[in-house]
Image 1: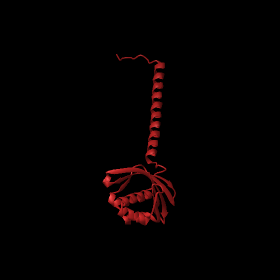
Image 2: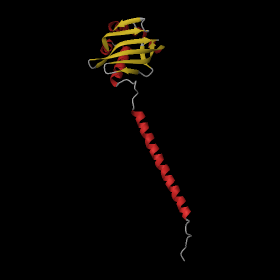
Image 3: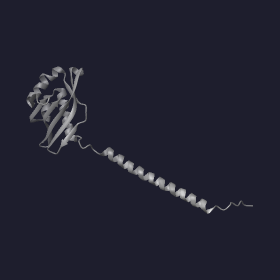
Image 4: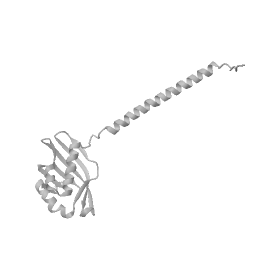
Length: 171
């Protein structure tokens, strides 16, 4: 004789359907939240900081630091304007491009001077000019002595090539 099961109660079937519907809604809401969070994360990873250097200005800054650290007058001259001025300690000493180049080779090389940016650069500007600031570490005697300071650079677009026009060094 075949087994006969008891008829299900109508309220049990309705309760099971409600649970299934609630679970479906919860899973759908979690999926939507996951998609929104994934989109937000992708946006955050791809957006650029409003004060970040452009690739062209970053290249000039890298070349400028490399020239200082190598005491390379030609490389230095390639990234500064003809009317370049260097202000040491915000106004105490002012040097032209030629004076700065001589100072690099005659004085700084003897101290084994080097400089490196230790903080993030910040830039404000447009297609023609930009102000860049950085926190720098100044090293001498091969790194045995160091100090930090803040530098501010004024860059200009000189016929399609970015060049440093002014460099202020602060304590």
